[in-house]
Image (cartoon, rainbow, N blue to C red; front, side, top):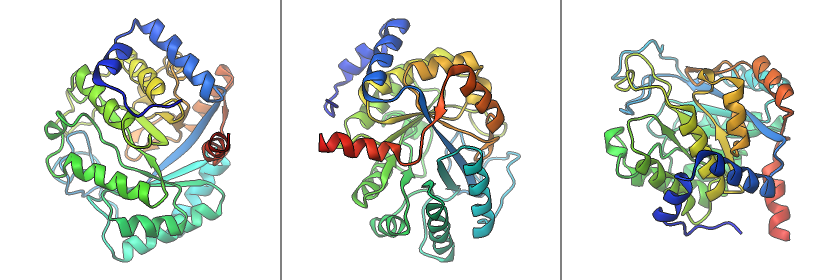
Length: 328
């Protein structure tokens, strides 16, 4: 049975297990709850880039930082749908659209996003958005348009959060997640390591996720991509074993969730990524860009899957599995 009452001490003991023992336990949990040969392939497109008013210290799209990111207005619907079709043809079953907004506003841009959601949904793909904060009504409208998932990461622990972001509170993030859940949209919520946080901060972030009334259906684990011009550009590269430890702990705490090996893969070898899959990761983002940061190409991932004996998960598989479990 899954649990939602994890304590900090319990998570600490899991997280600090000897690495190989931790990976073994996580792999055992993964094998019990999931098909370990399946990996969901997702594609993330930046449909509106740069010029964001937020001050997230890791983000090259913040207007206040001087990075190489060029500001682009919201893309046209047909252009997005053509990109989604290419992603589907390359093997992606989830298409995510990201816009560099602090929050959704009820205007023509939102109406255009709703039409994008309808169009991608009609392709038979899981459609996901990450658009910043949203109201309960906006979440309901997205659900009516066919939105399958909404991404809104916590980023780090409640205690360390203000060291990274001051323009939006932790509580506001949790409110958005609540609106998404209430609207019947699946929740995609995780965080980033390498921000300068402690191991205790990582544990507290996982605790927040694992003690929600319902675990997020998707938990992205991101390694900081250091971008010149951002406050964190000189942070050290995230150690691969820290990523493995985070993925393994997340898998044990949230056994039915999709644990996403997200940002930072471009700096990982195939063997390092294999350890992440062994530890319980069962989703990746494919395509040469992850919003504005580098990412392995579709072809590189196809080659990796062939070597590791993995294959792409069909769209909506997680929901079907959840229904089977509920009936049982």
